[in-house]
Structures are given as C-alpha cells and as structure tokens.
Length: 495
Image (cartoon, rainbow, N blue to C red; front, side, top):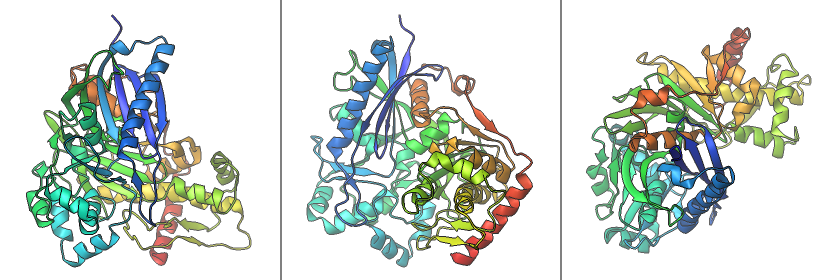
C-alpha cells in the first residue's frame, strides 16, 4: 500500500494552488489554476463565485495528473486541507446558486460605511467584541454596503441567504450542500464573530439587520468537516479535515505554535502574525486580534499587523520609475552603495498600515540631493520593508507580555538577501525562511493530517525536518538600528 499523502487546496486572490505532500511535509506534486478579478467601478473588486470553485477543481485535476506523472498514486491521499484568501465573502441560496459576485478583500466600496460606524461611536465596542478595526478590509462592512445598495441582496438576506468566506463556499460545493461550515480563523475576519465567546456575535448581527442571514457552523481549523471525492476527481471520498485562512495557514506551516513565535509574509503587502497563546493580548498600534490556528483541544490567538506596501513598492520603482528591469536586480543595486545617503522612502501609496494606521497618508521620497543616485532610491525602498515589519513587531511586544521568540518570513521578497539580512539586523533576532514556497498549503496539509489522525499530535509535526534558510544579526546591526530610527523620524514628519 502506498504511503499516505495529504492534499492541500490553497485558494488565493489570483489563483488556486493544489499541492500533494507526503507526511514529512515534502512536496510530491503541485499545480495552479488562474483566477480573474473584475473591477466594475473604481475601488470595487469582485470575483465569480463559480470561477473560484472551478479554479479549485482545475488546480486539483492538474495536480493529480502531475502526481501520476511523478509515479505517485492519488489513492494514497488520506485527507484534504483548504487554505483560502481571507475576508472575501459570498452569498448563495440553498441550491448553491450565487446571489451576488464574490466581494474580494481588496474591495474599498464600504469606506463610507466605515466612516459612519466610527462616527456613531462603535469603534471600541467592535474592537472589544471582534478584535478587529472598522475597516473596508473586513467582510461585514462590505456586506452592509450590499444591504444598503442592492435591494435583491437585502431581500435575500432577510429571507435566509447563506453567507460564507471562500472556504465555506468551497466546502458547501464540494459536499453538494451537505455542510455549511467554516473555521475559527476565517470567522474571526468577518466583523461578525465574537473572539472571546468563539461564536457569532448576535448583538452585532441583530444591530446590523442581519438576523435572517444563515451563517456557517464554526469549528476548529483541524476538524473532520465532511468527506468529498472532489467532484469525482478522487476514486473515493476523503475527509476535508482542515480549513484555515491563508495567512494563518502560513503561520502554522512555519512553526508559529507557541507564544512569541511570529511570521511575516513578504508579498505585495505583508501580514505579520504573532502567536500569543490561548488568551487575547492587548492591542496597540493598529494591531488586530485574531485566531492564529486551532485544533479540537487548543485555540491559539494572535496579534496581527498589516503592512500595506512591500513588494508593491518595488513594483512601483520598476514599472512607474523604470529604475531597473527586474526585481532581482535590486539586491545588487542596494549593496552597490554603503548606505542610503540620507534618502528615505515612506511607502504610503495606499495609506500606511500598522502600527501607524494612517489610511489617508501619502507616499514620500525624502532626503534627495544631487549626490543621490538610483541605487540610493532603491536601497531606501528596500529598507522600508524590514523597517515596517520591525515597527509592527515592536508594537506587538510593547506590552512586555511576549518578547519575540522567533520570526519566520515567507513570500517572494525573501529571495532578496539584502532585505532578509537587514530584517535580522534591525530586529536583533534570527530570521528564518522555511525554504518552501507553498507554506500556506503546507500549513493546511499539516492541519488536515492532524484532523484526520495521520499525526499523533503537534509534537510529531514540530519534529518534522525543515529546509530552512537562516539569517543571523551581523556586524551591520548597529547601522541598521540607526537607519531605522532615521526612517521612523521621517515617517513622523510626513504622516
């Protein structure tokens, strides 16, 4: 009999990735399927609900072909785990028919709704109940916009429309309507979930006129949700044994399983999550409180800070300023100068995230002289990435409850050695890259293995071999701290 394997479905904003892992966490096969977004009005971002689901099936189909071509057996798959783009939500009827396009987490249609809720004085109560801030980022504010602007949606909600994040939609379809469920991490991103009670918050739901809405059952991330043959792609049904938001899946996949362990995903923006254990930690500096991951006997909370612009800054230098041909060129450019020459870039292209949380801030390039070169500008841009992450970590640890134990970093920018070394130097702590690009899928797979009984417990997962790249603080640490302090002073002046 073939060794058991785990299938992970990582449904992201631009596409779906399917990956088969062995029980040691090694990739056996993978495939992707693209997913398009539409922009019907400025600030609006939508996706096709059927397009999301079909991208899942197509990614899995391609992955199983790749597995067979590599000599693997799809019959070895023991369980499936799902990680998904967070905050994106859908509405559908009992027959699984979408009632509106999926409203994507990037959508800004609810800015006015958020301003009204803040003006009405609900900010502190919502933070206390949900751990979140009033922001278009989170699902419920966009749902309220639909209720106020789409009569058909308002009617459907009153009549019992089903609501769910992407994981819930996928599960409902995979089980042919048998199960409408989600996990704690995804529920905690909706502004409708009480973080202390681990249940839907009826006070907020009733206040906002959503009492007719049919909400999913909520379970731990590692949980035997239901069996599915994935529309016949598998010869026999396997348990869907984990569901978790993608950033949380990455945290679990990178070993953030104890208080003080943190991860930073360095992509277009950055999500920094720190495990704080079973109880909520004090929020400060634009942090949100959320669920990190969960099993049947354990629910770990987390603090999260959102950095708006990381890779997007590098892309702007390339596409709008034409300072280099490829992003990989930036490391050599930054190292070509001994320091930033007094140049600082504040990357508030779409506002400034945690810990500053200035949505209306504008970007600024400061300190230019006739001696400044494009290398100085590129270096300043790259420096802004670890400096922002370090500011978030500082806000998380400011209460002194949990010092930073370790930081794992994933995402495309981790290929840039200058950024990774500067991050370690600035923090004064080691920074570890997991050495795998499919870290969200890995987290979902490992949790599915727990949910399906493939692992005896968390200790067995933590003992799995890892192919890590480690960056230790080096001789540049003192200069990094000085540059960081100068950058922070620039931020204070311009925002």
